Image (cartoon, rainbow, N blue to C red; front, side, top):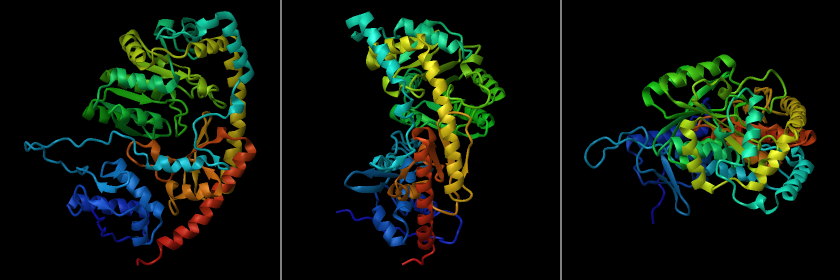
Length: 499
């Protein structure tokens, strides 16, 4: 039986560096020095927490980040081990040549497994990425489905052409023209939600091992797609105007990525909006280096303050932008109708990948959404939804100021669904707070799952659109209570002497 190795770790309990970061640093140092060799079994999180007299969540968080960076591997029922090769060390191959260290290509699930605790009954969860059912135009959807059956009969349940129901493609063409995007129906591909649109682009344009560059933080779904498709994903830091173009250009020069993925309007999770001048600069950069841009416009229309900006696709004069969006985040998530707009260079390849994936998007859903577009239902519902989202955002901002700890930071979004928050550094990070918060009856999305490099440990994403105002108020009250109770235990435990 393989017994776990005893780690030689000395913690600085009075220092500014969080305990879990110290653990990460010590383990990395011992791996890189050769003290911990590949295959070494580490103590279970509970055992190491008891050994060091620290919070178990500190150990869980440290192990999770080390796994995400490729230092550790976890095996169900066996434990946690030092991975086969150490990142940052150039391992020699059998022929004596230096081989490239591979970035992890499967999503780390430890933090997300922990986030499932927030689904318990009675928990006010701000962690999801969708609107609640009261935002859905149910009577209008029911009428549209009935009309489709009366008009089309069994035809509404047959296979549609892979490109999508032509009247719907024409309606999408008309819909996006109001946003400034000029296209033909033959440039519109109907997809099973925006998520499928993104996945199709990755499959059609990139091969295994190719490099995708994106914002950091970025949409969690894109991180999953890239790693599942075994594409290397690299995040570029953002500022208040979106992706840093100076850093992006430097990365392009050194690494030659095949695709740039951005969400320029109400970026998920940060809520940033890329101003017009940076949108133009990004397109100029992409054209200069001949790199396609995948624009995720799923939140573009969820604006309740400020002046609208044109999508990147509306500014695209060379056909370098692929525009993905849909009618899921707006109001009909379960209908799974998205669309992808691209030029002829990529369109045929995208159609072939789509055909191999699912033959076609469900015909009934396409025809029902087409009727709702034609009758103006979606535009009217979007206007009502945005008014309510503004009201809920204001309640969330007020509750955050009242209940969350001093020095907590957050954005003030003009649209979208999220507050992007940062906890004060003198207390527990977002993962450490999470279990206490769930026990108090509130949950959120832990921030570091949105980063390509495991950063953002004190960040949390809160979906203010997910609950009615009274529940938003109560949810923030519970979060504040959880932090106050945990900070007492945290400070006492982290300052205690080592056993």
